[in-house]
Image 1 (cartoon, rainbow, N blue to C red):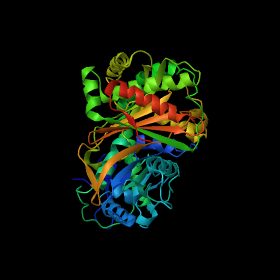
Image 2 (image 1 turned 180 degrees about the horizontal axis):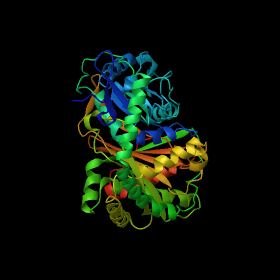
Image 3 (image 1 turned 90 degrees about the vertical axis):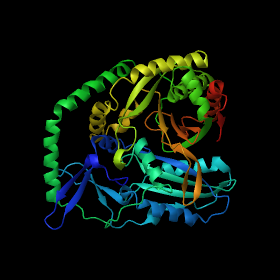
Image 4 (image 1 turned 120 degrees about the horizontal axis):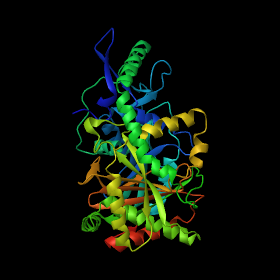
Length: 461
């Protein structure tokens, strides 16, 4: 088995003059989009909160030790990103000779005394703190004694390191019982400038040979994005420039109840969530004195179901979908399911063939923030991932819950991250603190929407 973090799809073996093969792993074109978009007020970072059952007692240092032992099985977490520049090709991942676990994992400086609310506030501050670029692009924070003998472990990854599917692969590799790392001499030597130049030249040849395929993907992307670009999202207070101060709220549902409702209405779990979100957003805007009957939601579609062979990085795209927000909950669910069923027929991930070059171009001339602060294509983002179906543990401590985290960016003031884990479905609402001060109203509205069709939704914070 290839260890998590060594991506076969983007790695080449080059022969050195001295000894054996040197691994050369570049970022993908999808990864380049993540790098290009990291020029906003908030960093392009994602994460999760692992809730550990430490009721039997724990020294926070024991959690750090457990993470340190598992990091050896994830080479990417010991690598930093290097930008060799022209003519040496795209950025590469190289082993960090100065890697120290204490540079990446720390303990919260003060105890959280307000349960889940306090933990999420700490997680928001941690997630929006930009990771240092001169070391591996991840960090973790141990938050002890959050509530009822539980400890929080907040994990933050730069988006270039992993998309949602790859992020789950990292979490799985951190868990007890995952395959151990193979014996390896770390750090491995970095490639020479000559090797980089040769590899870049080979990459150009590959790109030329793949030009027909690339042009086909551009056509698919234009077909996906064209209708949404032509029909702008309705103007509302959901679209205002956001900042670096974020706030989270979470809702918990019984996964079997959600599945039952979905199957009974020829829908998916994601359809149930999307339908609830449109109804909740409409309620929020009504409270603000606005009427919007349709919302355009950016829904990511990964081009892979799992991180095959341990490959990380990004292999996904997004499709803006226009969905109804009116009608009875079950009627709306059926309408949403019908719309998403059609959208899923398009090529997964094709949108990045257009969005990637576009974002890189506007970032290169310093206009990325101006561009995303004025977009009128989508109202919100919704990410839905299928998590582990069996309980995990870390260092012998059961992981009782996993809370997914993202950041509200550009002029999208509210977004959503959804994750299933061991029979529960967790929905995290991510909001900008300044432009969405009424997050509590949205949380209550989404809880009511999901409870109306599943009977099990409840707010946790």
